[in-house]
Length: 360
Image (cartoon, rainbow, N blue to C red; front, side):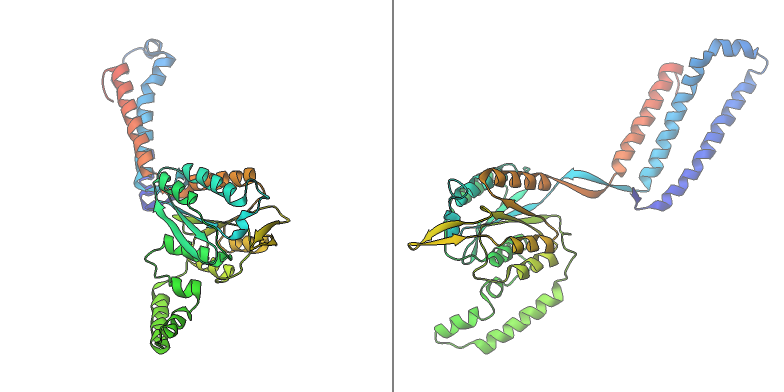
């Protein structure tokens, strides 16, 4: 336990003084009956009565101690439900998701597990859906509406290629919409805008280069990296069954997430040996890049999971759901201790009134 205002703990030195005052008052009362026969007084009071006589003051003393401790603003690491968190599901929709090594298909199994996952999230946790293949897209912005999330998952359409890095970067832009992440340069490369300009008959490379330099300078001045895994308000769950064939390098994208403190939990989907997929009449064997997925999770201080079957995938999502539902965090507990102090004080007064018909 830590204290935000530890100097208030010096007030605890007054507690022995209060105990001394209490015994001094008791001695004065004894002096008032000094002419009575003490053996008769003790017999009338009895051991049980003597204990009851001291219990209300003792409870009041505990209440005073609790108030002093609460004044020092104590804080402790406790487990609480999360508040205001956002989970981004980044799901691979490349053609390899048609493989049937996870029945009925990898995509269908992933959709079932993803829907159960979002429906099981705490009611105050927002979720978003990002899909990626040759590029990435936000198919459902962050929302608390579970029906919208389920509808977005049902609309998945398979596409060519696999851009794992694009999925991570698009997820980061979804979490930080005002962070100034340059999606065009990050996903398509710095030359994307210049190439488009040339196709339209206008070479604007010089001006765009200057704009790019200004944007980088602005970003460098405003953005400050934080420790990996330190951002507790959001996380990314990345599910893929393949390996990068296009787009930015996944590890570079993972470092972007780590610099922002966002954890990227990775799920390798499919059988360990891979499975054949028919693409344009050709049977192509598809395997996922497990080493890269482990590296992404490691860089961002997250975890990697392997899901070989639909049942395994469901179990993975359940584990992630549990992880996001509760969080250990340092929380000030002054209010709780103050409530205990009030309860002790009230109990002391009630017992004193009930036993001795006075508050003393």
